[in-house]
Length: 124
Image 1: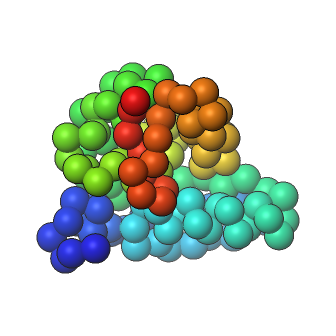
Image 2: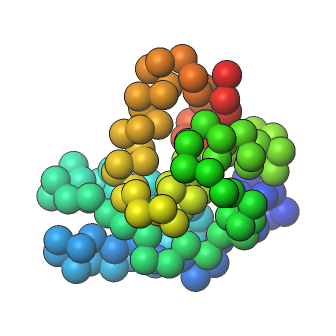
Image 3: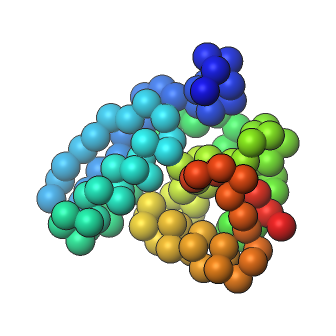
């Protein structure tokens, strides 16, 4: 990932938290939050929330539908919208990272989304 890529520019003061065990983790990129969720859930069975998502451009996202969220952000991410950014957008409406990842999986299995590269999404 280049230093000036949209995904790299999205890093900042982001924090995810497990409300069950009160674990907090500062992250550098949005997809790091998803990786943390996957590891943490595999070990503990706990879901993870965004405590603070320092991601530019989420103000443009005004819809709850994940396909619309991804479609809205696709222009900024020519190689696909990072799943972490989608989870940050969904968290603004109360969804946990796990809930969003599971919803994304359902949409992928239904043929409504695809991954042009790992953990990056586009609408079909």
